[in-house]
Length: 251
Image 1 (cartoon, rainbow, N blue to C red):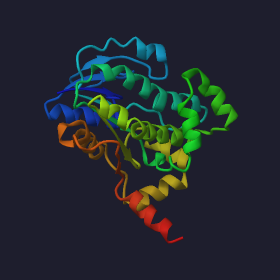
Image 2 (cartoon, rainbow, N blue to C red):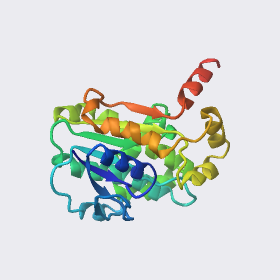
Image 3 (cartoon, rainbow, N blue to C red):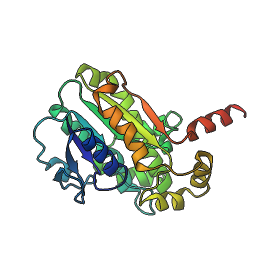
Image 4 (spheres, rainbow, N blue to C red):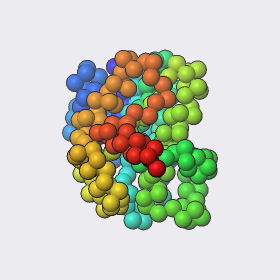
């Protein structure tokens, strides 16, 4: 099994690559930083289409794990939208011809993307844009750092679901994994940006999750064991979504 993993140097990407290695997979990593694990590393900046297009990816990939991403930070709205969605989709589309039938695409979304249905009009406007149009979109629609992050993850979920039929015709499948707060080096960025929202989520879950816990879900969706799982957004959040859904029904 040969797996292409973006963001393999840190956090959930590193944990997912390590879990897949333990399962016997060979890892091809795409990241700005060199991963510590045994892999074939390709350096790329996912905010830059030219950097993605310059990747010399060869051979077949049984699975693609899109784990690279940026957290919400002041002034980084354009970069967050570019990396978390446009870069992800551009790399995925480049990888599709290299994937045999039965191949799996697993993209890291987030609990932050859960309201994609409510925001579908904006999600569709955003996903119709080219990379060069993002800055104007951010300005015109008043996108702040938190909304940029939420929108990027809503768009990732929407892409997987809306491409299910197309990928099925190609013998491929795409799913997303939506963690809540995870104890990685960028957790403080989320706590600072989301404030009470982040604190409440961690309180309801009992604690922040670990990258290894998310990696188990990623590895399952990347493996042949999940062949009948298509277009699913798997919440790995310590029960947060379930509690919020039930609480909403009471109002």
